[in-house]
Length: 334
Picture 1 (tube, rainbow, N blue to C red):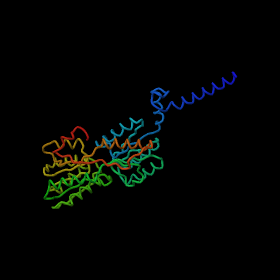
Picture 2: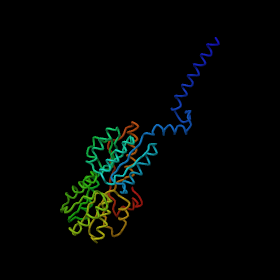
Picture 3: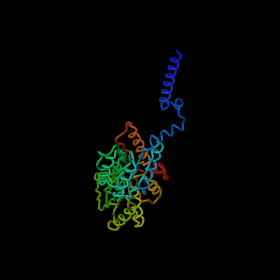
Picture 4: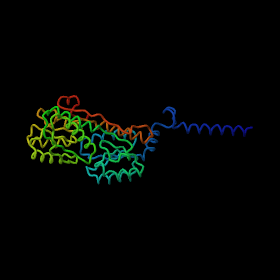
């Protein structure tokens, strides 16, 4: 009898210990046997191998710096490790850096391609390695490789610039375009702009266009050439605000006071220009790199944790000009 009682007590003790072990990781913090510090350590261990890569066109561009800061903040708050590489507008360098991130064991990458076509081999390598791809800002050509896309309505951004120009120049005139064919976001903006001005009652003529590779220095050089060859142009449409800053500099040097300049982004630099009484900037189709970075990070987490997510997210764009710039402030992004 005594032996039987000891056996029963042993079984009961094993059951209690078993229940305690399961409960350790369920329920509220009060229910858990582990301390808060142990729980945090456990979370860190579980996500230790989950690295998130970040590769965009050019980290000298304030737009991408802001996007990266917004994404990094959310990613790191969720317990992942965030690693960033800057290709500096070089598609070959971007390919090398992406392979290095694959070798480091990234689980996902937030990616904006330097060249939307040349990025394809890197997309294939990422897929083969099981890395989830979150495409931001400018689309890759082969979208089938992408898990999610977050960007602005770039066509509309260009279109509203064209509409504004028609209103300001009802008599039409000669136009120059500063673009970047390797970036699909800029392609869409220029397409939207050209389709808008094609509907003008009196015609506009595009007399010059140049590939700036999205850089300030190239925009400065190309716009200087355009102004010398076509001193009677009425407007310069720029693929982004960094390009528009370059065009503004050359217009000021040439003292071409009648030329209107359009950009896309809504950057602090352009908003400060809009506050000047003699600015050449007509307006900028604004987007929010803060929202875009945050959304990209949230969707990355949803993908990695098996939650539902939107395959495509488009941020709203809107015109900022001299009349409303005070509403959006000039010290940061909207």
